[in-house]
Image (cartoon, rainbow over all chains, first blue to last red; front, side):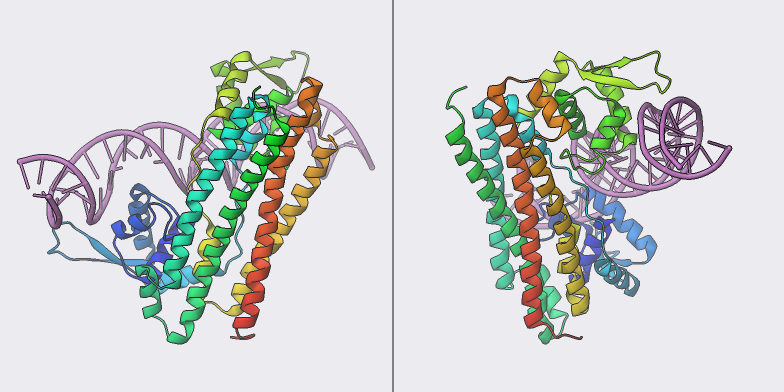
Length: 195
Length: 195
DNA sequence: CTGCCCATGTAAATCGTTACATGATTAC
DNA sequence: GTAATCATGTAACGATTTACATGGGCAG
C-alpha cells in the first residue's frame, strides 16, 4: 500500500504526470520510494477510481499526457496514513545471510563481500549528502513547490523534517561503512592472507 | 531467490523438517530471513526437484514428517550464492515516507511517530543483544550443529562471522534509537508544546 | 474429550519486476 | 533522418501475505 501514499505524497507537493512521478521514483533520490512506470500507471488509475486524484487531460496534447492533482479526499487519505502507526517490515537481509554462511569460503571471498558492502554504502552516502545540501539550499523542485503552497512560518519545519530524514539515511550509510571497515580490519588481523 | 538460499543455509548446519525451518524463519530471531510455512513448503518441493535437497520420509511416521538434507549439488549451489556479488534492494522506507509528509500534522503526531520508531528499535536491539550472547556462549542449536560438523580450528571464524553480523544489527538498532532520541530532543526545542 | 501445539499443505490476492509495445518530441 | 528522450501503457512472471483446510499428538 505504500506506493499509493508515496504517489499521494508526491502530488501533495505539486501536480504532475505519471512520467514525472516515474522519474522521481526511478532511483529513490528525491523520494523514499522506488517504483517503475509499469507499477505507477496502473496505480494512478486506481487512485483516480478511488477519487483521490484527478487527471486533467488536454485534448490538444498529442502525447496524451495527464496532469494529476490531489482531491480533498486524497489529501485527507494521505494525512490519515502518515499519522497511522505502521508495521515495520520483516527482517530480510540477503547480504547478512551471505555473510553468516561465508564461513566455508576463502578469506578473499569474505573480504570481497565486505569491501563490496562498503563501496555500495559509500555511493549511497554521496547521494544522501548531495540531497541534504540541495534540501538545505531549497534547491529541489518538489521542495520549493511544497514551500510555495504553505505559509512562511511553516517553512522551517518542512525543511527540518526532510533534513532529519536525510540525516537518518546519512547516519545509516556511515554506520555501514564503518562496520565494514572495522570488520575488514578485524579480519585482516585474524585471518591468514592466503587460505 | 534469497528464500531458497536461506533454506539451504539452514540445512547446511543441520538437517531439518519444513516445520523446523518455519519455526526458525517465523520471526527472524535465529536467521536473517523471515518466511511463512505457506512459502516454505512449496520452496522445499522445488529444491527437491532441483536435486539440491533430499527428504527422508519415515513410513512409520503418522504425521508424515520429512527430514531434509543438503545434497552435494545443493551445498555447491549455496557456496556459489554466498560468494556472488548481490544487488542491493531498492530504497523503500515507509516510515521515512511518513516522516517527510508529517509536516502538516500536529507536533504530537510527529513526536508519536518518532517515539514509536524508537520503541520498535529498542525491542529489536534487545533481541539482537540476546542473540549475540547466545552465539558467544555457543548456546544455539543451529550453531552448535554447524560447529560440530567442522574442524576445531574453524570454530573461531564461524562464531566470529555470526557475531560480526549481529554486531552490525546491534549498531543499526542503536543508531535508529539515537537518531529518534536526538530528533525528539531537537523538535522539543523548536516546536510548540501544543499546536 | 477438549483445547493447544505439532505439522503439512492449498488457493487466492497483493506487490513488485521483467519484458515488451507504441508513438511523439527534441537534438544532432 | 536517426538516435535519445518523453510518455503511457500491457502481459507475464515471481515473491510474499492472507486465509483456509486437515489431521496427529499431548496435557489437563
